[in-house]
Image (cartoon, rainbow, N blue to C red; front, side, top):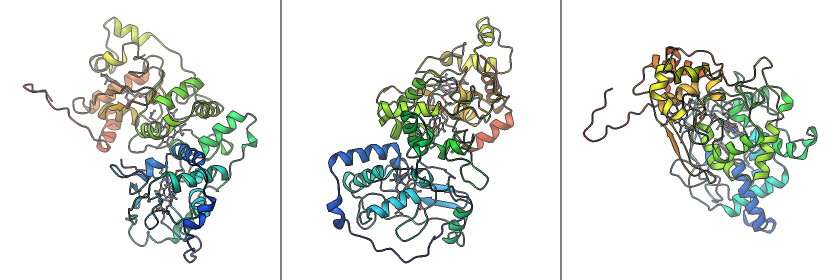
Length: 448
Ligand code: HEC
Ligand code: HEC
Ligand code: HEC
């Protein structure tokens, strides 16, 4: 699992905020008296799931929380750290204050600033109570693993620590505690706390400035909040606001809950970076918290008042059903897609996603759509929906032009209103994704 998250002080380098001497570490034993009970540890584990700490702090095939996952940035690679309670290589000697300062403010005990690939601008919103539970979990609920942290692979002088501090002063969002008083409903306030805080949904779903900071960290900072982020590893995090076509405007609260819990609903199925979020984090949330997240998301107004509502249009389906495949891309669709996604573009609920009305299909940036067509995707099973379904890859046998044609067809059919896709758009995405070729069955030759 390689993450290409540029959600960080990426155009500059690491820095020391204070340049201060190494802070004296307090020993783990000294804090034993304060260590809380099993219920607190269990609550901390739940919160660690809500924050998806494991996804970033675990390498492929590595021990949970032992770090080492690589993050590519425009200036070089950095690695997540060991956050198990190992005394020498992990955070075993960290006091509660050390831990809270790193997670909420991005400052290490020795005064170094962390790269915001660690989403501390979001975690800043965590309450003291939740921080204490998280600390209890990482100290008592996680087994210590000896694993040395890896140094950054950023060439000098960019690896010097001072410019990051300067960048953060200029651009980094203010580290702010959560203020629930803006929300007049307790459930909405809870949802806001989870989405803006532990869930760090905006790290992917909010657009960034050219200087890399998220354009808004909360709904109070404007309509850019959760208005759709730039591609991460070739997948575009969608708009989560009330936009009727490209956002969640037509989704009910229950649709959102079902998606977060099982990775699928009537409208779509999870893929790309969202698969991890569902697998490691959201499927473990209790129903009350999922409902709170959904209710909060539904309060966010559209970011584009000109976007028209989606209405199903049967014209494309009628033509396909009567054998008319003259529209651009219709024949490619009939031959390759119709068996699963059907002529009416409605798919089979919770098995093959609907393409009509699907925000991913009509989004402004067609990267995800092209990516899924070229490389395929697997919808992974979850606790509440254990079955897994696969979208086959087409990149090995459809040309850039054919992929462009079928993309254009699905973007314009069944009431969808997405702009056409060109062969050049497809060629660009093809360069960045891995297109596998299925093995021929024994005794058969596949025409390529
Ligand atoms: C999106 C990826 C991501 C997520 C999610 C994430 N982290 Fe991190 N974290 C990192 C990276 C990368 C670093 C190292 C940053 C650096 O080297 O400047 C880091 C550093 C840290 C550190 C500093 C450790 C040290 O030795 O300096 C702590 C503590 C930490 N994370 C705790 C957590 C906790 C607790 C959670 C969940 C609530 C979490 N992280 C979630 C990416 C992440
Ligand atoms: C690591 C990046 C990442 C994070 C963090 C993330 N998402 Fe996503 N999300 C994506 C991507 C990429 C997609 C598009 C693929 C898809 O639809 O599954 C997506 C899609 C979605 C969708 C489906 C939207 C649609 O129109 O199909 C919802 C709902 C969603 N995310 C909610 C959330 C919530 C709530 C959070 C925070 C708890 C969150 N996401 C955090 C990357 C992320
Ligand atoms: C064998 C059945 C099958 C065929 C054939 C198929 N798909 Fe899919 N498709 C799926 C499944 C299953 C998913 C969900 C994958 C996931 O969530 O990871 C999917 C996902 C998608 C998505 C992403 C939508 C979303 O919300 O997740 C698009 C777009 C798509 N397919 C378009 C097409 C097109 C266009 C074709 C023909 C070129 C095609 N599919 C052929 C099964 C199929």
